[in-house]
Length: 186
Image 1 (cartoon, rainbow, N blue to C red):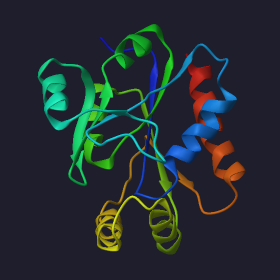
Image 2: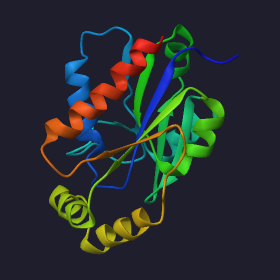
Image 3: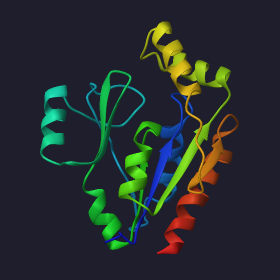
């Protein structure tokens, strides 16, 4: 049975500004009870930049075995997951916004036919500057992320491209429009 809600999965290369745009939209929709912004679970310690629930790799594996993820994937030597609680929200007809991965799109499209994929992009120089500025990785790891990011073109009728290299308000308002349009569909 198809859930009446809509999953807005925000994807794009590292450094594109996905978390920043999601935070922008979350702040503006804070009082809307029909929109939910998902905190990812990641096998990485808590740190600056991304609000996530940190778990050790063993705990992550247990959570997978227990069916606690709606979607999960591996990237950059880490495990990422979106909690299965989104299924209840979607079944109610709500809109769920999550930072996802292009690597999980086949599974996401199969499980959630009412999906909107927001592909956040920025020029390579902007991505590099942002990744170095985060200070979480070595320059070689930044280079590897940039190379991996170039090899994932994204197309489909469910994909909306958002360019994010200018002022935050421009791309932030575009993401907000996408989310609120989905809220109006239910």
